[in-house]
Length: 116
Image (tube, rainbow, N blue to C red; front, side, top):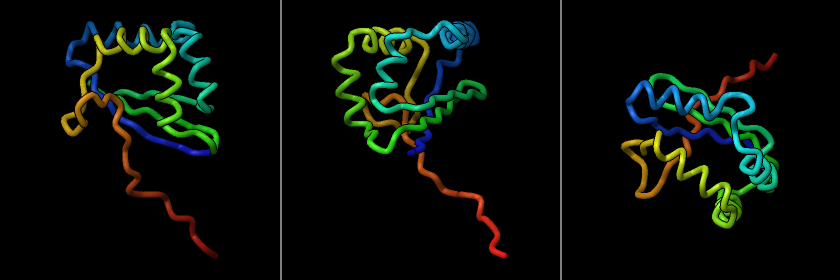
């Protein structure tokens, strides 16, 4: 299993943030998008928010790559429509590359296990 952490900002607008969260409430996500993620090797996906900053944790199978997922996403009209809808609420991080939404975060620390 692999784990990836990504970040993205929402637009600084409380009404848009409420609407964005409503789209992500249990039972509100589009099943076609979820199925596409599962088929790409995503085992679990969690999003957390503080203020307008979001943090995503992706747990994937060992064969997962962002390139393969991007290819799958590009050919799925439901994913394309979802991404277009979500962009209404989202804005890139200041350090994002042109056209980049979720930015992959670099792990800088891991709790060290004590050796007896």
